[in-house]
Image: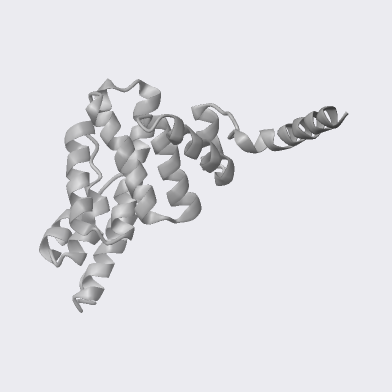
Length: 194
């Protein structure tokens, strides 16, 4: 009798704890949609378990890095995870070896790293990554480096770049360039510049 009640109790405990043992299952696309919707907790649980199961998964490292940056604001750990994802892609042939849906994710990963380097004041590293992105993907994100050039004291180089970018047809690039130009002139005490 005791053995049977012990088994029942053990079975009840197993059923109670079972949901805690596994992360929610989802597709890569579902996880990306949750991140875009600002629902980071489910993705964080999923990505942590996915990285534990396969640390060489680009998708798992990417999702974990995005979630740690956007949801937790953890710059060092998100940088580490995104750099791991970038390493995995590069070891497997780089951007052009990826299928189109993963190329999009890889571009998002690179953009996130550009922002993380800027937020964590790794200015030269940000500039180096922006240059590497242009070489690897053909995308020109040089406008993102204007702030770093300013912080490194490379004012003339920053001005030349940002004046060119201020003529862009892209409103976001134009706004970034103009705002950073204003910051440069304010920093250097040249408030009459226009």
